[in-house]
Length: 280
Image (tube, rainbow, N blue to C red):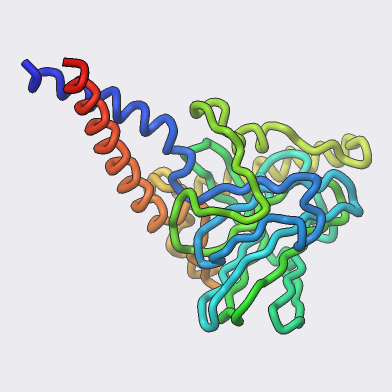
């Protein structure tokens, strides 16, 4: 009799786990707030090799957001800059796009500036992004500081690290409460566009519409459906320089997420089984 109940318990457990875990299948999201204006007050990632995606909103042309990350000597610093493939960000000129100023532990600095526009589709949240720049170097021992700024108000994503670990403690940061898939902060961030400093005229809106068509063409040419994971095509990956592996839809991350789902499902099944035994 008990055996006949296992399929139902398994189905319920898997549904619950997938509903809560699917949006996390690619990276660990961090949401920068208006208070995170400088590295000293922004989130501190204790391990910069762990894959994080920092979602931010520059509310004015002179505003900044920032965070920090710790590294050991010789570890890889993997950094990417992205924006949502949506209006108004798709209408920005190159000089208006966000950029990241990076300060190393020894005090030296460099800027990660937009160098290209490559689009990909993130299937778990059904959102599209434009990758603007990638950077990789052997890390120094200590704390790196990252300051994001832009000539116009808009949204961006700073992606760092390649090692997938969920729920890592972040200093100076409180994770948002997540209740169900439909209330995910990622979807809300993508839905709420930042008010631009000027009203778009017909030329700007026409340009944005043309660029949306270009993005559609890119998406088809990259054959995203064939991969099932929102990855760029193999040839597109070869053309991109330098090559990076910290895509928010990275294949290694997705595989790890599936493992996380099944482990979580097993835990839920075990808990349900124990509770049913105790009630007898």
